[in-house]
Length: 84
Image (cartoon, rainbow, N blue to C red):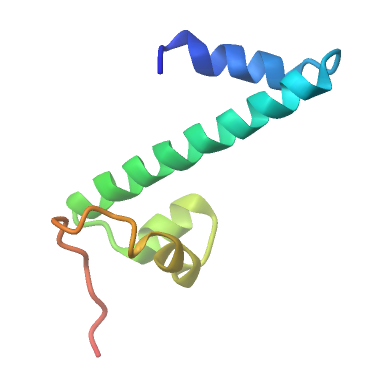
């Protein structure tokens, strides 16, 4: 994705003169945000950040972030585990 594209999508999403284009832009922005969030979660895990810290940064519970990403992250990343 080119650097100007997210800004253009945001402008399209905010423009209410063409709701169909705005809604398509919102879908694209959601997909972009999801991809970026996964990239950041993986980067945090690579740096040894635990699920609780990641959850706090995202404003969700540890359980929510673990459920969303535990099976999506790169399997080569050593994931911190809770002690039994």
